[in-house]
Structures are given as C-alpha cells and as structure tokens.
Image 1 (cartoon, rainbow, N blue to C red):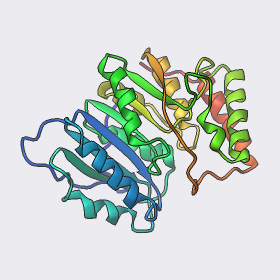
Image 2: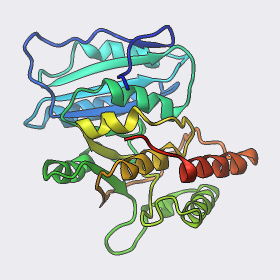
Image 3: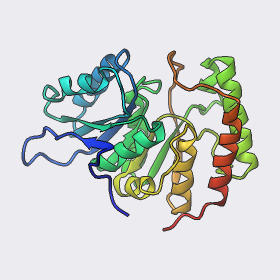
Length: 265
C-alpha cells in the first residue's frame, strides 16, 4: 500500500517550511467543506493553541472540494503562522465526503502523533493534550469519548433528532458486534501514533459519517490497542449531517461490510 500522492482529484499544495526544520511532534488534520464562515475563527484558535506549546506542530486542512473561500482562508494564513507551527492545505477537486477528506489529510500528515478533529471545534483543541498523554505513553490509538467518568454524556446538548439517530446507530452497531465494547465511536477527536495512522488510513474506505467506526474497526483488526479518553464536547450549530430515510439502509449496509470485512495485515 502507498501513501496519498497528488492526482488530478487531489492537490497537495507546497509546504512552507524552512529547510532543516524538525519533524512535528503533533499533526492536526481538519476536514473542511464550504467552511468560510466558521473556519477563520476555528483555524486561528488552533494556531494559537499550538503556538503556545513547547513542541513543533503541523496543521493539515483537508478541503473537500469547497466552492467558497475555504482554501483561500488557509492560504492567507500559511506564511504567517508562528515558527513552531506549519500550516498545509490539501484539496479535493470534487466533494468526496468527510471520511475521504480525513483519509487524505491523515496520509499526508508528518507528525509523530496525528490527530483529526472537526473544524467547528466542538471538541476544543486543548482536549488533544489528554489524548497525547496516552500516545506518548505508548498507546497507538486514543479515541475521544463524550461520556465522562461520572457517567454523564456530553451529547445531551444535541438536538433531540441527532441524539435519537446517534442512539439508534450505537444500538445497531453493538447488536451487529461491531466494536461492542466501545460506547462512543463517533466522537470527532481521535489521535494516532504516526505509523499506526498510516496503516489504518491506507485501509480506510468509507466516506460517510460512520467512517469513525470503520477507523476503529480497522485499528482493532490490525491489533492496535485502543484507549477511550473522556473529552469535553458541545453541540455546534451548522452541522451538515442531514438525516435521510435511506441513510438507515446505508448505515446497515456499511455495518455489514465492517462486520464481514477481512482486514489485510
């Protein structure tokens, strides 16, 4: 298997980084699709957070075929980031789905530890330090969980329809024995040791919203230890997840694929 390379469908823009710069300790991958309204504040917040750390870092914005100013917003900030932060843009020529955007970003990221999170920062970037602690202790996969140690669930802030859909998905997933021991596969913050990330995302295929479960399913099949880490999360308006009747069958289909798939080591 090979890493992502530039193609007519995927453009990897030149990286602005001084020669001889050390390898980033951490890479953040942010998927984005028509995010010109939310991305400026979110990206500036991530840059400020990473600039305050005592390690080199990298941000990869994976633009999924946006038709607004999303790519330009990234380019405008590329040359002006602090010296310990590198900002990169990868761009899909057509919209391929969130799972595909994250896959592209994860496969070009160079950090020793690689995270992905939503551009709306529903899980604040500061929460990544909780996952990083486990990764630096040798855990290959750290998955954020919105369920807190006291049993409270941060998803209670979601609109009723979203909460109902999430519960139904979890019930179906566990009934079909896909990661039955993991309560929250869909938390939008996950961290990986670099080589584990490459092995997992080279095999990842789903582009729809259950790709998170696929990522953890592949990690488990490859023998990687997964640690769930409670993180803060809050509902952010503007989600592009549209619940359609046919999605039920799409989710069942994808869960069957996961349950019956043979993951090549």
